[in-house]
Image 1 (cartoon, each protein chain N blue to C red):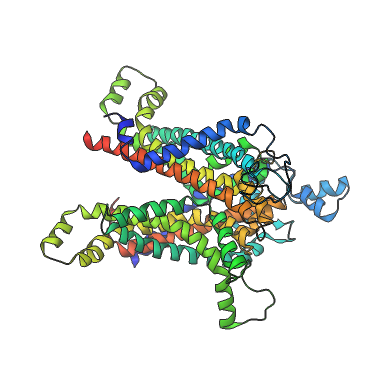
Image 2 (image 1 turned 45 degrees about the vertical axis):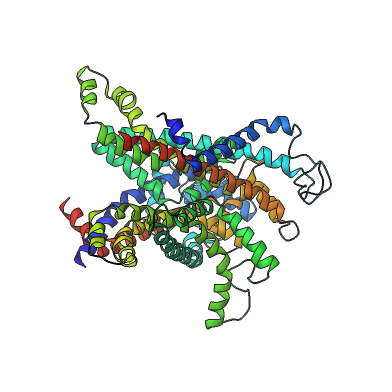
Length: 276
Length: 329
């Protein structure tokens, strides 16, 4: 049975996949659906949701279209979520592979670095990194990846340690392959599966961290994010709580979709293991 | 007890290189920051001529090579000198130690609450894996775990402080209330209900899921079958045999989560204006006080190391196998 067929047997996974598909579609279509700059003023300030059909979710305290902001905000969340996860897995898998394959002093030093990164609260590290370098999308991505690469590194190292004594690695040595080539072309691809299983959790964490950073005013100031929308709405929390509540709900749905998709995926992967 | 002592010493020695790497990292971030301590000092003191800048740089060792400065930085920190906060015009260590108790109170209560409720609900879910109750709790906990803590805090404020007016909006206690003793404790408790609730609600999902997963594993083991064959009641099997054996991994998670909790409290503290370490970090960011921010990072790293140490000792005392296997390794 193929992976897709196994995945489709998990209702949670399917639900998560559907949520993610809709979100990605919204993120891609946002410039077409709302061609105007989402930060431009389109109507009277603080229009309540569901009162004006032209502005279904109302306006914020500057009179900006909340629905347009929401659609454009999905771009930042998804982009940062996926990019930071990619960066974290790239860094983590490389460091873990080198540590596990080289062993000895290299392993010892690299693993102490992993320990150090796990000792500093990831959110504080991201906060410090962004505030020192300056807020822009790539910096935010890197800052989040800095706090998330240790998990993949540990997993990759553990996998590599169990793989490197296999016969096919010995065979690669015998035919005179360079150790770096063995590590990255023979071992790493086989060690990647459990690391990828972790990726849903990292994507979810990255989306939440990005939201928290921009909530504290450390996001890219030139784009709309759900976190900055929540922070904006906070000023009128008493009179118009919906301005903070709506983007927060979008975050919950997105992150839950990622988790459910991940659950379905790891269930599908473990079913394969049982069959073997 | 002696085993625990050895464990503490071994862990303390092991944490020295880790802390050293953290210090080198914070030093690099300080170097990356635009402007040095002299610039910050001049901004706060209203400027000075070029000669003053030169003497200050020489006095503070800022004209030395990066390696020498790194040495100086480490030397100062070993002597517990974290430098001076330009923003607050006070020694960094003093400020941090002053704010620390509030954060510890917030984090400690949130951890205790999420661990307690999370593991209990985990037992409820794991006592019949696959049942409707189990599925509901598993999905529900996942949904909670997807909630951003700062947003949950705001929603709780809207409901309980703005609409219902049951609980105070922000702060750790009523300012200048003149309350003392039990009245003051009750006041602090009321202020902490929402922030602790927001943190605990989110992190309890972790313990719930871990407890449930652990119990699913234990159910498959032979001794559970033996307990059933003996004719023990289901309740007794769940509590005395299955839950008990699934509890240990949760204690490890307590230590691992301390760093995440500390990070989470940064945002929660700024939502509720609680004068703790996290709020201080945010003030340092908005006031561009990088040395203060680095001091906070180093001290939180120490905090995480100490928490993990305590968790390890508790673990070793609970599970005799841990120390034994490490001693022989």
